[in-house]
Image (cartoon, rainbow, N blue to C red; front, side, top):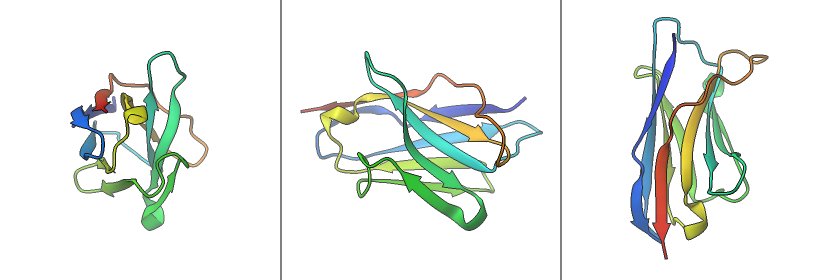
Length: 119
């Protein structure tokens, strides 16, 4: 069974940076792409960034373009989210997820990691 574990969240002042990690484990782990989503209090979960292993291409939500960077380490089966110039509106629980193939659905959600940005 594949398990995704998010870490790296915390409390930071506006303008600061954090680096989140998402480590995948399991003998049957396969990945076409991995994603970061976030959910702020009282809001729906929203897409933040995606990393496609083939070509190591990336995609971002407009709200984080130019501030966040997603990257992956295929040896460690880990995806990172570097978050710079953080804003209070970035406060949320951040989740990662995996798509095994091009046509697969996303997997189960983990517990996420809390990011709180103070003004």
